[in-house]
Each structure stands twice: as structure tokens, then as C-alpha cells.
Length: 66
Image (tube, rainbow, N blue to C red; front, side, top):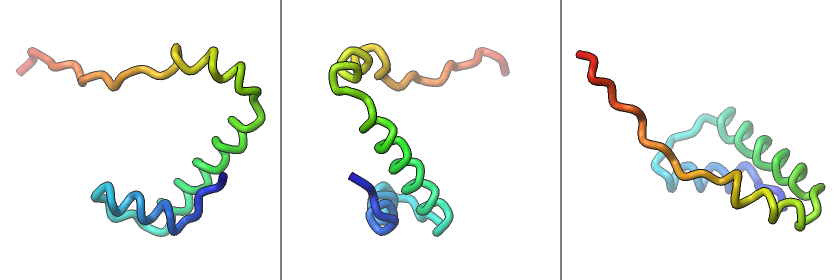
């Protein structure tokens, strides 16, 4: 499933961002390239990878330096 530039713009705006046309087009291109690439893998391979590759977001390390 490809993502249109209009959908990308709507999603980014709902996230509170004000994307430029270039950012919208680039985001749509990246999403579509990744979706096409993932569609080439058999589901069985993706099921084995998913649990190990998705990591929670880490908090930035706090520095004690002042």
C-alpha cells in the first residue's frame, strides 16, 4: 500500500508539525520505498526479525557536567 503526499501532510499536521512540500514528498518517498522493500520478504522471515529489532525509545543520557 503506498502512501500519498496528501495523507503524509495530514498525518504530520495532526502530529503538530508544519511540513514543507519537500518534507512531505520525501517522507512519502521513504515510506513507499520501505513498504515496497518489506513486501519482498516472506512473512515468516519478518516474524523472526520483528521481536528482536523493535526496541523501546531510550531516554537521553543526562550529563553531570555543568
